[in-house]
Image 1: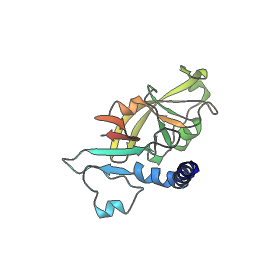
Image 2 (image 1 turned 180 degrees about the horizontal axis):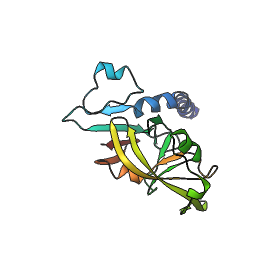
Image 3 (image 1 turned 180 degrees about the vertical axis):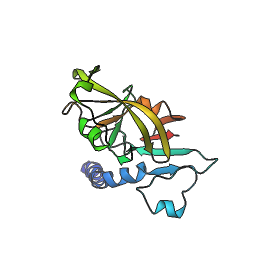
Image 4 (image 1 turned 90 degrees about the vertical axis):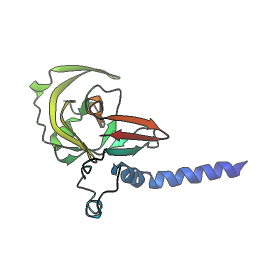
Length: 176
């Protein structure tokens, strides 16, 4: 009776110890065809899909059941939670500063309903967001005040501009 429990705990411990690096590797570019060897050598430089192919990115579900992406936003890599329930992409104030979106207190003109009540937000437009080989230009987004959001959200203002996305078997596949 205790063997299955010990086995499950061992598997869980192994997943916890390797989860971050495995998730990072899975979140990298997943093109329909293998990328050239020179492109594989540099994980920091996303590779556009070759002509005639379609880019796709596969994200693995983390231990909490969420999908996380590491998009380049205005040329900087951010850690974002994929949120299909968010109408727009939403940035923490700190992430907005990191990518050069400077907002002043007077810019918080919108009000958004969240699980924690109504929050002021600053509407912004991002020139380009890139997840792997998938690039989307002119993405509408919001910036929330400091302390109102733990992690920036990759919402539907990015996702609806893709050819599609699907969730199955602990994986989310984004198709550019």
